[in-house]
Amino acid sequence: MAENYSGTQLFGWEIASWVELAGNDELIYAYYDEDMNAEFIHIKDGVCLRVYQEYDGELDLDEGEDLGVSISGWSDAADYMAEYMI
Image (cartoon, rainbow, N blue to C red; front, side):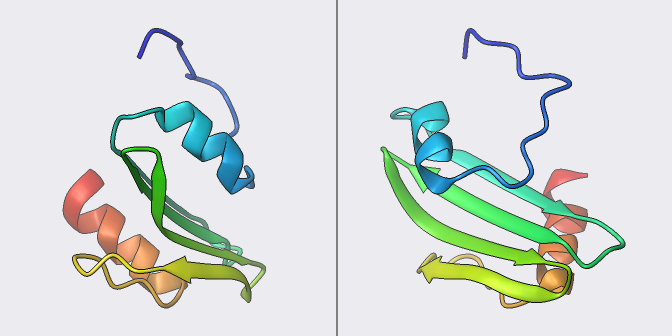
């Protein structure tokens, strides 16, 4: 990717923005914080396979199926990050 997104706040983006950012590449984004906010986004080949967004402990969006990833709550996003991203 040619653009540098360092320092950019990604939390709370619309799915269309994620799909545009990913283009035809695979993108996996996971985020969580102590305030019970969590996001998990998986895009591949221009298609959003999985999106999970929880804000202040309330589910905002939970769509798609990615058989390799089970996200059903804030702690699942944290566990995914701990296992695969940190």
